[in-house]
Image (cartoon, rainbow, N blue to C red; front, side, top):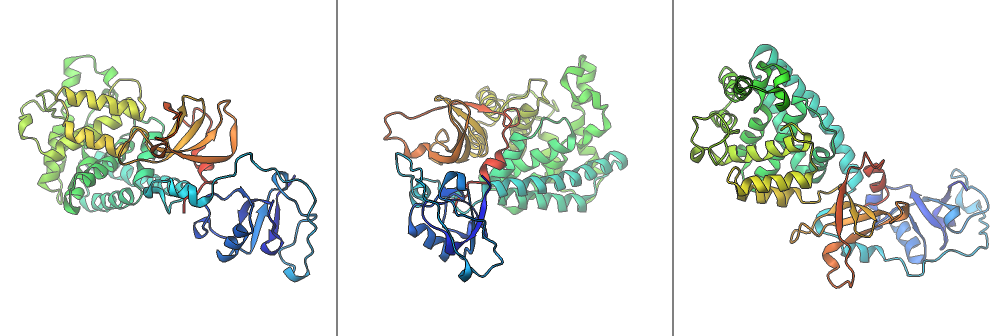
Length: 427
């Protein structure tokens, strides 16, 4: 049965609402698809300035004819079909109840819009980063002003859309492209830098160094970028020289600070004395260099650039933790990074021990293992007609608390995260 567009004056309880003529962020409703059960819901629509709504007659009360919006509403006659309206055995939670269970961090956000906007902006920034790296590869010189503009964009975009920025890095297809890696590492460095308390000037130095940390690779045969192609000590030595080559290129460029050059030079040094360049004392390397090493390794683990199979975000964080316990990485910074990224990043697709699937939509700051998820599929992998949120942090009194047992790749599962989230908006 086709959807129907009707004026608000013709709306009655029992209709299934699936669209309105106003932005959902301007309404007091948590979801934009629901069964209208009370006159109070209709009154709320009116107060929000809604004039027309779209109904799904197959899921609620119908009208006899499709109403033409151009006709004056006074002349409209609406013939409500007499049919029983399906009612759930348990009353549906009110918007107020569901909102009260949500983390404060997600209130006021359209998660779908956040992800779409960030994806579009990231695409533009990727083109800018590619231009920068292509210019450096050709000329051997960094155009500081161009780098300055891109770094400022990365900082502004990342700090305004933190969760979406993390999600796109974790959900993107594995790519060996240097501009992909450079942008991702710069984004992650800015996020962690802000968390640990760096000011704007420090963030700028860190974001710039992260963006330029591998520019020396342009002077090395691309085949050697992959660990599987470096079979000899000579090949490894040539590859490792990219850190110093990066610094040399930055020294030839004006407008690049000494702090940026130092971070780039040190970012492959590990705390246990391994890593490179060998002549650098690991006890002397800056905290920013240690931070860059962590986010660089994280992205390489996600994309398989270390020669290992690509890992999930959870697996990559686990690997970083193990390396920090072996005194290769700064344990405190790794712990802070884990708390920021989250074991289950927002927008992750997860599966419960009950077989149901959901999308992570929020975190508990007190316990990163207790996210808020939007359940989208039942145990048989059939989509719920109305996805609904569960906040694990509020379920401590429940006799049977489900557990997240798996993080899935949405693309491999044929799930468009944005499409599911488009019908679920926080207020």
